[in-house]
Image 1 (cartoon, chains in turn yellow, blue):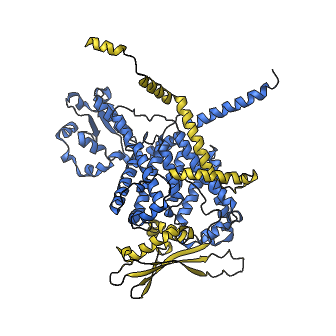
Image 2 (cartoon, rainbow over the protein chains, first blue to last red; image 1 turned 30 degrees about the horizontal axis):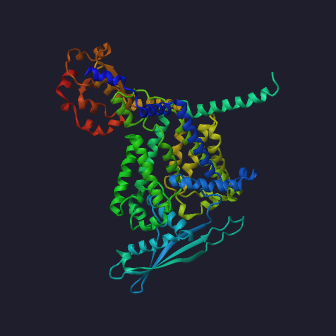
Image 3 (spheres, each protein chain N blue to C red; image 1 turned 90 degrees about the vertical axis):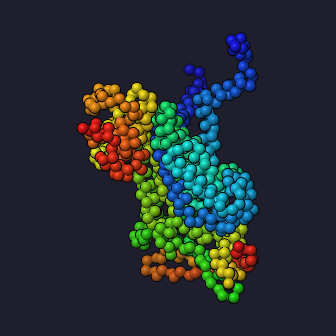
Length: 214
Length: 422
């Protein structure tokens, strides 16, 4: 046994183990660690700044960096989106919205009767409920009606049809309508405020298929 | 001196100074307590977010929700951190996903498996945001980017179950060890960037500059919460609009001036509370304000905590003696765990073999028991589980035992404890 252990003792360290040990020493070296973190920090800070600063900000336009900023931003956005780190902070900016809006659905049933279904409207809910249901506002009032989000329309129509499914009189047509009213500019002194005027646009009509209600 | 010498030396010095400042800012070790506090707030925000979403988990993420899984698969054209892409279809899986998500959010809050939990929470959060981005607001974006930074933070190094377990295993001491604060700095920068960015965006438009922005935001009925009659006045609207810009600029830029920092954070808090009062934007204000703890100097945090301890002392009453056996490793470690958990400083730790213990508790001289810890409260000694119950009111980690302390009167104390009292 002693002979074996001495043999083991003088056996040279395999190159692979040596390399791993060197790598371990290298990685745990404080300077290397710091340098690695520094590179990460610089990349993150650059990406953070490029995504956050608007290309039309006066300090960017003053140096004529608008085009450069825009093109770099496009590339960075792609990386950030993959990691889920896309960020932009244009809250109520550059200008706040000037429209009050809501979405409803006109449902035509098999016997020809029509009724309306409306996405939850925050102003009609209690304080606690509107806190929980705010995402309906985001989805419907800010996203659903826009043409660039038309991929959502069939799903939304099917969902509304299922919500209103009645086996004896099933929904046959769902029409999604967008209502909006412009907020008039601040009235001048002695000027009477303008009344709000509502507009309506049916932006999608869906014919319900039997399988949609399952 | 050779000509041009200064011109060569000056940039080198400047570079060295820059390097020194960079290293000092990002790498000089400091207490990880602010990051740990942020971890707790972050975990609570995630739990609150999931609770608010709870009624609509299947509406937003279900196979037949408002964005069906088929439509989502067609739309998600690129690879992203999204578990829904690999998850089997079916609402049961969606429900299971959310319960697991909630479990890890709770783990993160209490600091159990902190590193793993922070990765799990980030992955789950990223997944739900990729699965349905149509319902996201800036608060969600902020949660995700801060969650990414939290992955690298020593989040479990303080105020965590992980730390108590490390102390129990003898791998950590009672005092919190300083750590490299680079993640905390990044969190500070991210928070400041949020404000600076929104300031920049607002200066690009006309309404914020001409002072009418709040006129429009207050007339968006879908955002209205509690009434603010004062914002019917044109002059007040202008002042409030410009004040918002000033506070956002200050939070982005002036917050880095140490002398002004706490005043600016206070202004930020006022801004957010006023928005929280007047507008219905769930959790965003709290998400933004949670980042403020990363700006608090650990020394100030300690001072504030010490003040709070003194203030709360009158509510908790006298300190309670915890007698441990210094000769026993198990007993000492248990005492250390309790020391770390005793955040209000209401426990007084005494080695059983010390003269102080003999003086305070003469009955100990003749006692041959092997209990790890004894608790001396109200003139009696309690051992084992009864000891924990006796201190449950004083240690937040044991608050869940408090009902038992109310239920167990003197009659239920062990005989030994009653004898000791006599």
